[in-house]
Image (cartoon, rainbow, N blue to C red; front, side, top):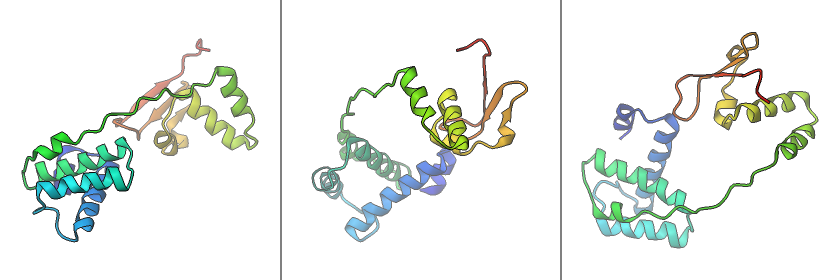
Length: 165
């Protein structure tokens, strides 16, 4: 399974999540997941939803990992896996006004933390992208920032428009 994921170019985090899901399936039935029946899979997903109260996104993560395992590794295709697809919860994000954001960032007392948070906010970075930044990724002279680690990004150059507010 891991070799199949590497061949497909899955990120390390996705690989880890999928392997964890298949391990939990095996742990639940205390045996290899390869010979599990369709009914056992249905019961597993019912357990996730009803007993563990897993969120729709969590169930989709389990589904993706288990579906990948069965379709790629032993090469099976079971209807159960196509039936289990919980709807996404549709919630509106909380959006702060520009003034609220700057007020919030202004309350950060440590200079180092304030600079880091301002950079993250101003560039619209994800947390993973921000944690992988290094000083060498900042080109102050040309007002550019290299994003080398991020979701679906191998390398991205982020430039600053000096005329932008």
